[in-house]
Image 1 (cartoon, helix red, strand yellow):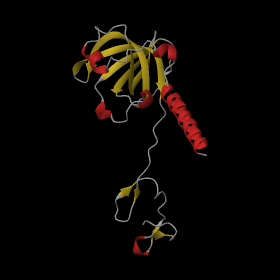
Image 2 (cartoon, helix red, strand yellow; image 1 turned 135 degrees about the vertical axis):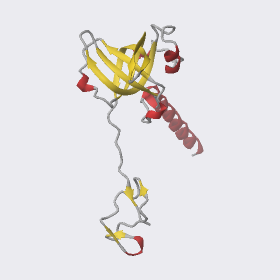
Image 3 (tube, helix red, strand yellow; image 1 turned 90 degrees about the vertical axis):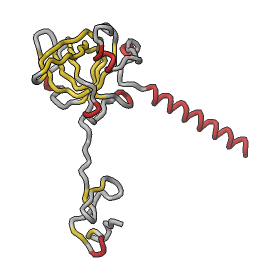
Image 4 (cartoon, one colour; image 1 turned 180 degrees about the vertical axis):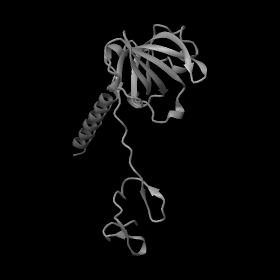
Length: 194
């Protein structure tokens, strides 16, 4: 009996290892493009010296600030955001290290990437462009897009308000009922706060 249990445990551990490695190996970036990426290169390094890293391929995440279709390409002005699991850009704009310009030579309709769209780009560094940003000159690193992933809009869960007017979120208090009941319960009584 003990031998059967140990074989079953070994089988379960082996299966879990295979599943975890399969999940970890999944990437949004096509394999042929991912092989070209320099994983040691950061946006801060590129921003500091774009010409030094010209021709290298980098993964960048961000939020579209502007998309314009020009004669030869579509130009995206992007607020850089750090990427997390599976290269998805962060939601917090305060973590940005600056802006960059990305150029798509194939047709890209600006309507598909409106302002506020979160994207991940695999791009080849092509240099820098200095332009006026408000009342100052700003140097944008520039990249030519090899691959682009548009992320869906994040779901925002609206807060619910509890007994003393403080917000709480999600499970287990999804429905608080329309009326106050006695002793801090929400009415009808089957929806209790405690």
